[in-house]
Length: 298
Image: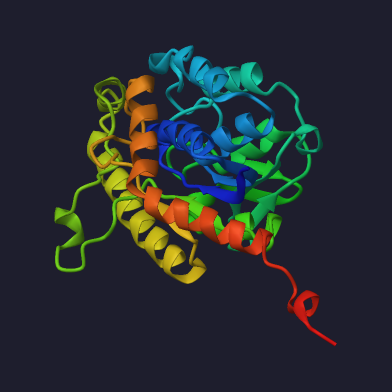
């Protein structure tokens, strides 16, 4: 018998492939995913799994990506260093014109509306359009304009969407997967591990425009603010379990080995296996708890 949970998948660019390994290990440990909320790369993994793809199919999809051509440069789609061409091609392959109503599992995709400074929970319409808004990291990728809203990466305000996960499956435990390095209270933020980073291909492209220093400042600023917001939201939203794959050395746009990333996700689950077993134990206790009235004598 399986235990149901709701899953909150955080943002983190290339690091997010570890989400696939987390899902794989949860399923292997008898955990059933009732619903998924995702921000940024978390929204991509959430949507593909919610569509009904198996973990093996997801791994094959990500292995099929030409990571060197995933992003176009420069300014292809609007105000941003990078364009979406390769991402759009991948989403067309993985999801096509699937709508939220077509998904097999409840799914919420998170973005932020710059016009109202508010989190937007996307649960209707075409899924890939919602993803393009959720991954629109300010400065990197252009915002998406939808129904009068200017939508950008959900990580700006809700990096790990615990509340949305809880809302979809009231009463079920929420497992959150954070790709942000935990902040060390006694260490200056600038000296802590976990820089977003960028791969040599992008450095070469950007250096041609004499904006490489500007790009690095932007990257470091996003990293600092994202980590602070992530920790604050996790403290406030209180998921039942927080998993943190060991991805501090991996940059936001770095090319990655898919198998290695999946393994890191599985290892993050193994670290928390005791808490997972406690969830299962609590589930069985509730399942077999009989009302006291059945044992009353007249």
